[in-house]
Image (cartoon, rainbow, N blue to C red; front, side, top):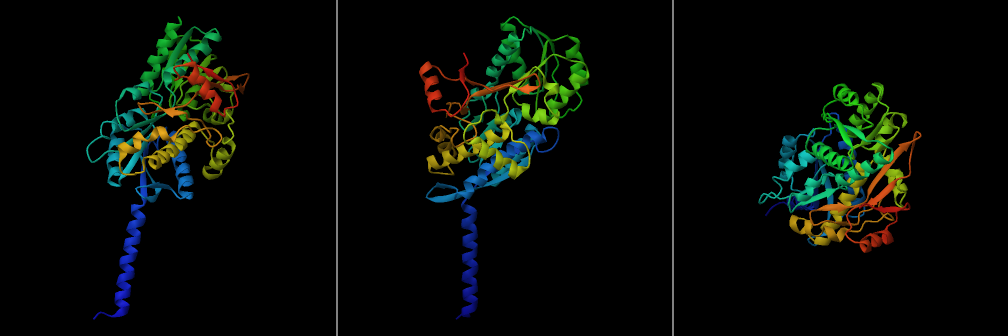
Length: 409
């Protein structure tokens, strides 16, 4: 007969192993692959911070119930330097850790993930952050996309520029599928109104910090405004360089670049005069925003951005979908349950998301802002997806947005 103390020790060891494995099994892994180094690192970090903050909140309240037990979330982050090849390699590693969903905030990298995320026994939800309309036509059954569609921003920018009397525009926009789509969409909207594109000089805003060559060509074409942008950091550099080269016209800032971040990097709005872009994250003071912003700044010691806000909300939506599906290992059931996560309204969340499209896009307002007289204007809020006036009026009824909501036709 074995020694009682040895038996007790063995029993305790077995129980500890069991408890450890149970604790491990009670986690849902969420992956992140994005640019965490290089010129776009600030952009990637903002996206990551939003996911991290949501996970901290969800875990602090006990996690989510699925498959008959409580699960908490574990965030696994990997740097892909905005490279599609690295993103795929990262996804393979994250799948080995049984990631249910992988966030990727760069269109070209997320598109690469969509080629592998429905492979049998290797399925995962791609949580993309892009305004590309191409994402709505992928016919991928495991895709969720955060952000309004850029074609609507192109319409808004064209209307703004037309009201300023501008008829000539140049384009210095980031290379890649996302930048190409922005240039094509803006060109179509601009020329439809009768405007002229005077120069088209794309540049890699993910790797480049010197924009003198493309800007020289664009400014030489004497445009009234320049469609410009990529990640916020390098967009700020390009705007500063354009002003140093003597450009006095307006900037139409593509939606990836955030005006509040640009203003911070440029030490104010002086160089941004006569610009339009996506509104500052704090420009729509819904009831829940102030508490969210304070918590974000206290936690991450930096300015809040839309990247952080929308990744924060997308993570909360993912948790809600898991709870609604009642499972954490059936990715198709979780994806199908996303409509039950909405609406997410401004009394509880820092931005509003009303529903999700069949293609997987989270439907939220397009919000823009301008710089006039050295100051940011009041935000303009546009609903762009409704098909009937009744739908539009219903959104206005439930919304907590305290500024007028407009219908974009």
